[in-house]
Each structure stands twice: as structure tokens, then as C-alpha cells.
Amino acid sequence: MEKYLVLGASPNPLRHSYKAVKSLIRHGKAVVPVGFRKGSIGGEEILKGKPELDRITTLLLYLGEKRQKEFYKYILETIVPTKLVFNPGTENSELKELAVKQGINVIDGCALVMINSGQL
Image (cartoon, rainbow, N blue to C red; front, top):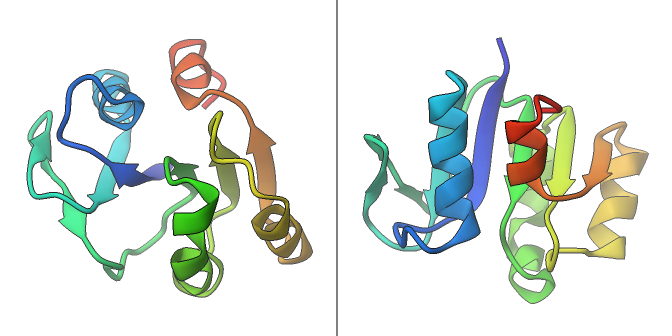
């Protein structure tokens, strides 16, 4: 079963990360929101920091390039997803290159569109 990590999840309903978590839940997907603020989305508590998580298959990135650096080791060594989705505004050639070298499938695109069209 696929399990999604939304990195950069926000409790603000206007944010795309919030909408992505809600959409994954609506589509019956297992999702773990990880962010910087306390709160919940659709009954899923937003975890803070760099929690140990098992069997994450797809990581949806909602952090800007500057903020991503502190998560490189977490993404590439702790989580090690099979897919890493760079949403618009999160593009980062350095992280992409590191992920590809590790055999992670890198996708540039809007996770919301992909979820709602059945591509994720």
C-alpha cells in the first residue's frame, strides 16, 4: 500500500499542502503530514521535526529550496521514498540530482492535480 509524506504541511486551509493532505485522505490514501506548526488536517495530526516513519513510498515536497537543505539527510537517508514530487516553487536541482543518484523517481508537477487525476 502506498503511503504519502507531505513535507511542509500547514494547518492553514488556504495552503496547497493542506489541500493535498485533504485530497489524499478523500481518495483513501495513507498520509502523514509533517510541518512546522501544531494542528491537524482531516483528523491527521501534523507532526513536527523529522519523525521516524516507516514505508513512505511518496514524498510530496512543500518547502522552498532554502528550507530544504536541513531535510536532505532526512529525505535521502531516513525516509528514502521511491517517489519525490517537487511542487511548483520547490524546484531544487541539487536535491533532485542527489535523489536521482539514489534511485528515487523525481517528479516535477502539481501534486494536487496528480492526486485528483489519479496519477498519484
